[in-house]
Amino acid sequence: MLVVGVVSGSPHFSNEKAVMPGFGDIVKKTFYLGVGLAAYAGEQASSKVAELRSQVQNLADEMVARGEMNTEEARRFVEDMMRQAQQQAQTNVEAQKEPSSEPRRIEILEEDDQPTQQAQAPSSDNNVDNLRQQVLNLQEELKNLQKDK
Image (cartoon, rainbow, N blue to C red; front, side):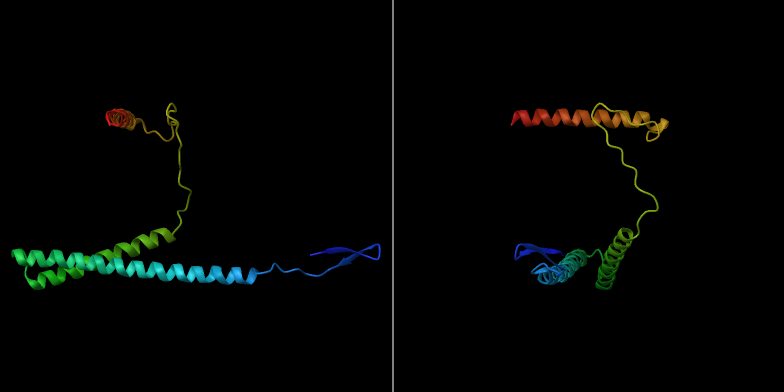
């Protein structure tokens, strides 16, 4: 940063570097915030897993009480459900990490606009028209319900 000052009537130039005061504290606080958020997310995930296990265990206990399965089947049921939940969570995380090879196509329509010919398949014209009509009917029904209140 170039600092300009006046000394004895003539300009004085100084090539001092001015550091933003508190910048290091901001970086440090941002880092701690990130660590705190990661810890909080971990705690939330573990509490959700514990809650899910409890619900699955209660369901298995009810099924054992009704005689629909024995205790060994209930234990395997709980383990299978937990394994499936963890695999599904891992699949979701992996899907978020992998970016798609091409951008996702998004078409924004106004109420009066018609879709472009590329986005609209000829065989789905009737289906699209039916869906639009259903949406319009639902919107009209919603307006009527709101007026009745």
